[in-house]
Length: 269
Image (cartoon, rainbow, N blue to C red; front, side, top):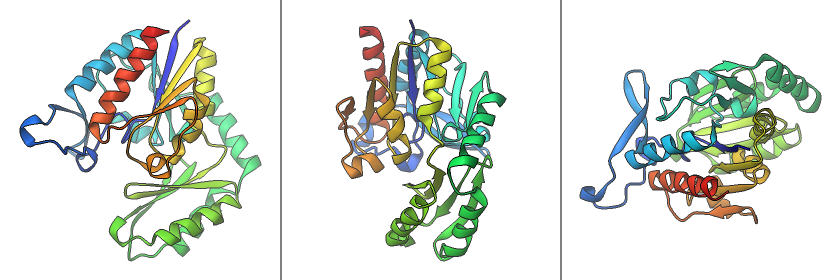
């Protein structure tokens, strides 16, 4: 039976220039591979060693990129190795099969959201009204499923984020601050539900996961084994669980370590 590896992407396997955390002397910095270009500019990277590890992983397990990105944002990433048959986008709102959203899965998700939480329009209106234009740069809606703000982090009022989290909690939504983005996501919209569905379809008897943010919590807990890096929301909160291994590495070095851990677990199964 195959092993299924469901991994978050941004700040877990791939990194922007600002998130690389290259703390070593310049002469010892790892060689980097650009895996995403946006508007003709390089945007995301992994080490060349990590790229080879990902190729090896794709040959030995069902690798499932698992992201809060929209389908459009995900599809501009060019990961090394065999093209994944499955991918999870929009925090579980879409399961892509060979790059195309599965309509039945998406219909199930949207029905669940309509039943269990406040509508997106209410949340979007609150964000537009309550967020301070001094630190808000963009308002965005992702695949008609959730909303997020792009902010100037150094100007952001952290207490406002906490107040937003309480407001959202009472409406069946959750809030996550990741870099320059504040996400408001319906609680039933989860990466773990999509991972379980792909595990069912593939017959996987071992599920492995990695992630760095609050929105990865359910994914990590649902997997048989999980890893989190030494940076990110979960690290800041000191989050752990018996099935989750906490790694000391930060930045792009953590992405490389996570892939080594995945390969070791798959090959040792």
